Length: 403
Image (cartoon, rainbow, N blue to C red):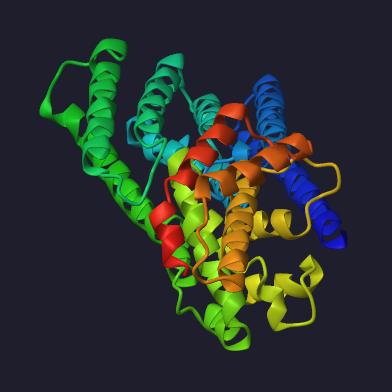
């Protein structure tokens, strides 16, 4: 609890810094550039309104939990803070160079991937507005051009995954930027088409391409693949923690492995994060290695072994759920899998040759959970529950393997 309060206070301080720094820096740049008193006041007010809006959107997204942000940005909000502070400076400095050179298309993508699509778009509009206001002869045409280019790029890079092919989205984004740059030069500035007017747009496209390729590669390595690689490690049955459990209690080890398999099948069938569910099934009883099964006794195992944050969240919920909170479907999948596996292993241990009616056993377990009213504690629909029942019954051949 103290840690959560400390984290919340730190975030509030970061938001205050964002707000004050934005107003102060824009005020300072407006003064240095010799703007009129009216323009300085306008720029400062707009900067504070924009910063305040973005901060409100960040707070609103945080209120929705990890679903409010893309990827793992809920847990890594420092990323956006750093990018935001850098963008305040860059947006002001961009006013000193020709607008055709501004690489906002790629920078809007960066801001969105470090927050979410809506915040990224709002950030792009805000920072382009700052650059236009500080320009000597800025106009709405520049704002329209870069906002449209950013919107197209955001739509193309909205859902990045390990298997995402980025060549076509990069090509389309650059093509749209090129079209808009040419339209800006020829239609809005009434310049005659010539080779000279292509120089800055070409440099703009090259800069956007470089930023996109470098950033997307780093994002893939340090955000997307890092989590995937960690799941591959901890979900290996030969991972040291599981091996240690096997050495201490073979029955618990095999119970964890079989529960993990079954929970993963349910997760895949219902579209959950199967890797995180499997990790929860494998490690929720790892406390048998130490002094107890409470969260305080086991949390260090997950932190020391660098478990992905979503897996830790599921484990925390499963081991020590918050009082009165609605539990996730993922937690129900693990619990049902564990109960079915434990029941079958118990019956086999009593009589290795026992004939088990798996359908009847599964129906009995799930019907009891329903009749006891336990489903009220879970964020699950009757359709999901029936699908879990069907998926559990499909694994009869696997249950025979437990003998």
